[in-house]
Amino acid sequence: MLLTDGNPNTTEDLRTYESAILSVANSEAIDLSVKLGLATEEITQEVLDFLLNRSSGNDPQGGARRSAGVSDVVVTRQMKRWHALHTLAITYRDAFNNQLNDRYKAKFQEYKELAAQSRLQTLQFGIGLVYKPLPKANAPSFGFAPSVLESTTYFVRVSWVTAAGQEGMPSDLTTYDAAAGTIPVVGVDAAPPNVAGFNVYMGLSPDALAKQNAAPVAFAEVFTLPDNGVIAGAAPGDGQPADVYLAATKNLRRG
Image (cartoon, rainbow, N blue to C red; front, side, top):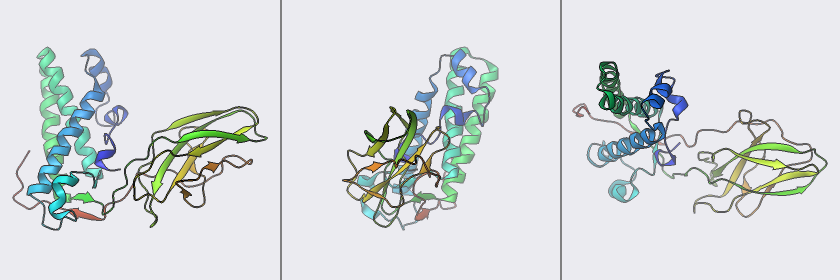
């Protein structure tokens, strides 16, 4: 996924690092969604600062970096970890400030240090960039066509595809309730300029989506599920891989 596609982590992802985070947030009236967004904003500024001032000189955007911002930045595994740890740090910072509880203070200091280390690791590994960024797809539009199938609930995501076959981050999960005797018709209402078509991922449960189209569906066309129903196929991906990495120099300052 691109950094501009949304928060790199969810509240459930945070539990991988801190199993008690949901109960802490609930007891201290802390909105984790807000903290995830704040962490994304702060990391975005850090990354932009790095690209503007500390890159190795081979930035594909060159002098256009200020206008491009972070629109071409890929969320690497290192950045995803940095985001999670930074979110936990600012969450426990608020919990400590609310209660002045030494237990929360220790957690805040622990995650603050871990986040700082993860930041350094992320920048030393390199900020991943793509030459032609594809943003996360918008939610699809739905219609229906006659069918012999029974009433079914379908779970659907779509993704943008370029003429060269590059695929962006799939849209958020949406559902479509097809009445008996109908099947879903999936379309898109708008797409970025460099998009040639879209892929459709569909399943009968949110955890079992599979690609349904053999070739990208043209932007002006729609995908109609065949009467034989959902087929097996590739699962949705996480968007574009990086085309190039800009790594930090040895004199990178600590966060």
